[in-house]
Length: 330
Image (tube, rainbow, N blue to C red; front, side):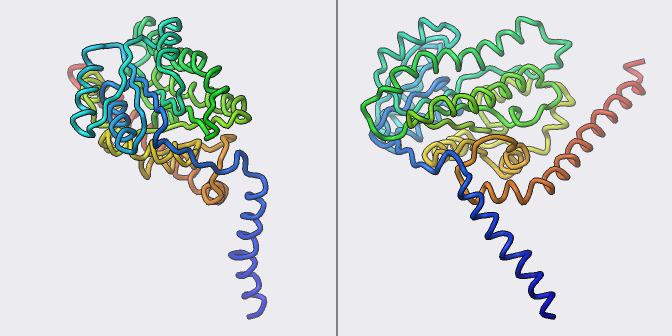
């Protein structure tokens, strides 16, 4: 009886406490709080969808908000929408993130930026074989090079800011930036690239009290999402059917809360949380609790991931068999 009690005590109390103590010692970067009230939050792709919801949320929490997009008309509509909803006026800037010179002029005009949220992005759901290379290049230029342009233009001023409070650079990635999905070859490649950029950038700017975040929204109910679904391959719809769409304001709330806590990974729903734990790898982690969960749950979530892969490949196999056997394909 005593041996059983000792084994239980060791397994469920001593080992977890020792692991927590070890993790507390090694976790880097340390925890941080990033206030946004009375600070300048600059949002790219801010004229609609998640970007507009982020502008609403940041303004509601007392931030000075600027939004950037390509269309002046949409920017003016977004500005009026935020003013109507919150009573706060946001600054608007029209520029294409692919144009470094234009982006640099905007950053200089906007003044000191404390929180940069890189929300811009384009999406095409189509098998790679059917995509034009021009579409692939456009996706990479906007989703990846656009982020490089914004950061390159912003970083010198952010590093020498007079505000002693921590600053933030947040990337709006996607759950397709955590796992590749049929029909998302170009899009997933662009979003996976943001993780490598974010991990390297965090090491480069941590000494300047700048903290990097990666936000992973699932499918989100926006005007762009409606257009995406019109062209989305049938297999993509089948595989993605298990993941429901979130509302843009729900994603914005999760994103702003994550940015304020300095989280490197910011999942937006339970599925995203599981993906973040399963794909943690060598990413930084500030939260002691999340680090503990990542270590303990890694094996279990790997089994769950393999089950998902089995389900997806089973769907692909059945779809191709059905397609070959249908009269239309013969």
